Length: 390
Image 1: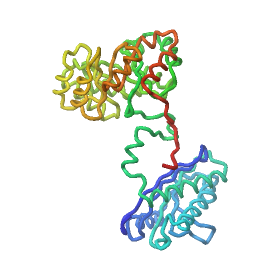
Image 2: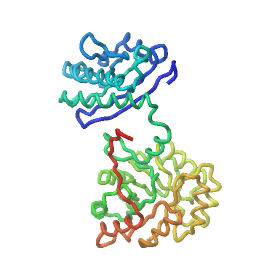
Image 3: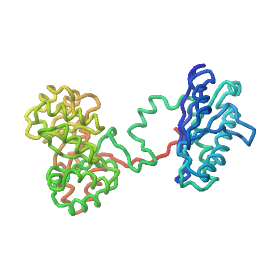
């Protein structure tokens, strides 16, 4: 860090309900970190009163460290968790960071540290609160002083990672290939059976077909997510009009990807794609009955994230579509092909192999889907890692 700058550290350690989440800044007393330190100490807020980190009463740690509770302190029990185990843990972590050379000893008087501490109101075990907050503070300090993470780590981990407390993985389809399973039935009981039988893999993408949506409404996406929170859900809206409205409706119903028709007017398609980007879902172009998808894509001011081709497109065609849409674009192939054909399609550049009745009408849905996954080399990843060591 520069003499007037500051560094940022973050760490999540432990298990609920005592899990510790630490955010901190380390910087010069003469810079913005020092100003924030003084302002916070001089202007406390009710329920979030900052306290000095002390090794024991009357012995504040160096560098001077301020603890700010993230959760509002509403009673004495909540205050005791901060003034007891958390205060001691943070102070000990800072002192050990100096002793171990994480923070240079010669900078102990020059730096100020502000530590934002999360303690869950249901956390009761003071031993765990202490140990988790010690470990999280020390790790956050180490990361801050080392400038962790650099942008390359962020970009590498982005498609792999999930927050431990979110309960599901936000999958933006950045690690193809994927096996798509299209649900075209109009009987929800049948759909439930299929969803239960499919392997529990985040490499499976579920497409809610137009007949299913028309019968049960766009809320069917939420029902699918309730049964399979690990799966990306595509809402096959086949939008031809009011593109931005239909995109938002699908996004509000938790669809991760929303499909529109390449037969729609160009302005409708563009509004659809722009709305998808606004609400954070992927725009999926369905090219059924379109003679020349490349001609349509070329005329669009904004490009779709995914283009679904049908039949047996050549590797050259797939390459041209990806080039026209940008390097991050994906091509989905909708075809009732066997596992060997699926593997060949992936070799040709397809990222998603969208299969329907070959899987959903199989007598052994799990085994059939698993054979596709195995042939495509799709294996499960650890979705809920709490990464403390890179």
